[in-house]
Image (cartoon, rainbow, N blue to C red; front, side):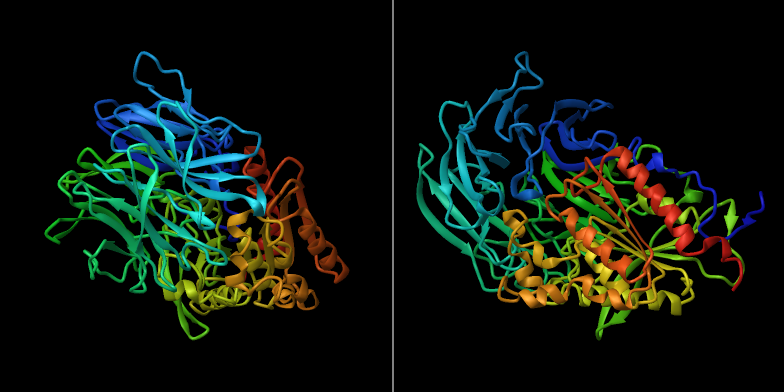
Length: 632
């Protein structure tokens, strides 16, 4: 056995290079089933602007491209872009954002446009086919920016007529669910200033033979309750997920209790319209993904209430759908990258159909997350810790590793323990990486999400500072070599953690927010009132918005700072990054701003990804003085 070489942490040679953060990687999402085929949408990281709808027949080994350029831009964060039935696909074209029909497996496989542009920006999403196949129900967004209108519409499936508006009374509408044998649909809706995970309602419409609304019913509505993911069972009963118990649990229309009452999350934040995490089998049983204590699982819930976990071999589930007596999911684990996985309902072993990282490093290089908990603001806060791992190198005895602490964006999302080269790149070089699910993160119940209400920029930053202090106290991080980083809203968290004097030697911001007051009037409609809940009503609380800016903490700032930003960022304008750079320079703080002229908010072009990671690595080597970390 080869003896490991002792070298300063952060300087170890690694098999994971910057090319491995792009080449061969696929983003997988929106799984679906139709007959004997599994569908999904995938985006190659070498061409992030060209998502493709894929299909794989059960008897085949290689998937086929059904259609390139399939994507919905509804709501700013997109929506489910297709539905399939009987071999016919109804999809949203990425270029025109209209609805189209395609028979990809038949002799006539040319797409047919079902909607026409009428001069204003129009985006469709979350299409669902009526039980008789005559109508396609979908969410439609008209206009741009803060003035966009949100509707539920019915579109003739043969393209023979214009869309009919079925619902437009609320500011926002969720993906429609379609009754299996009647002209009925159900959907969630919500109004400003709420986000869908704050408070939403569930509505059901009855339609006549022509698709006109004949009646409207409120199925579920209560102050401070979020409703999501309506779905009809094969017998026509309506199910949904709500958090009246404090957790997103399954519910049936008219029932007082959940079919699976648990301190677990069966739903997810509705950033993306049409995301699903449960569905029905032909016999009426439910296959559902749920998150408990930070780990995901999948279970079958029988009509008799029997609860049976399915073998998954993974503990992260991004999405799940059912059809043909089986479930299909996008799932991952600490040793397996996200993959499309078919889950037979009879409990047979899962079948991996498509991996998002076909060629990961060997297991000897993979650092798996260790879950940790610590106290912050009198509450228990959770995180993931990835220790350095390299089969060829080790760190000096008695010296803890440098820590790279990541603040997720959102902020209403969650960090999960899925294998990704964006973590392994650092751990294989001798860094410890921590991801903090600060107060406000999803996946841990409503009370955990509500901790951040009115306190964004304060509580999240404090949680991250306390996470670093906890890991230092446990001997898992070098107190002299702490770095914090974040993207978008997580950039504000990271920058405020640095401004708070949390002991960080370096901070890295990816398109980070530095001026919350500049967000409400510039962002898209869905997020235009988001900060009302995170900070306070805008513009009445203008001074409080200014107080949450890291620009207020420049006088006590000591962390070397690196900022990445796209010149075309429509969400966080470049001017915010320039103000931070200029302010830090005026206070004598080392700072570098790297601007990518052709990038927007995502910073996702292949060359950009390669350059910014290499630049960050070089920056941290100097800012953390890694070559000197051989002595305790």
